[in-house]
Length: 93
Image 1: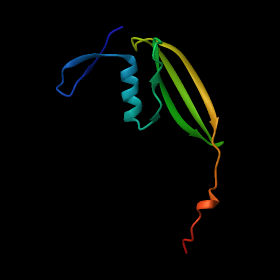
Image 2: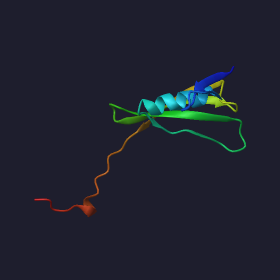
Image 3: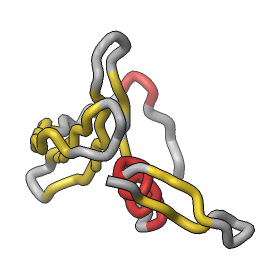
């Protein structure tokens, strides 16, 4: 598959599905946790959102090494714990 986008000069440039999705999520103001592991032939886009529980939900879209084929989608939920640091309280009024 070949994907092209217009650069700032209006010229077509070849890109990847990974790059197109990453740009779209950034433009939509999503918090992302993207990455890859050295020595492995894949990378991922992690879309981070907070749920009502309270918990953080991360949707990972994994791609093969060339960034054009989606190889998996996984969703992770991590509880958010609230910590009160009373040792550093200060009087405000």
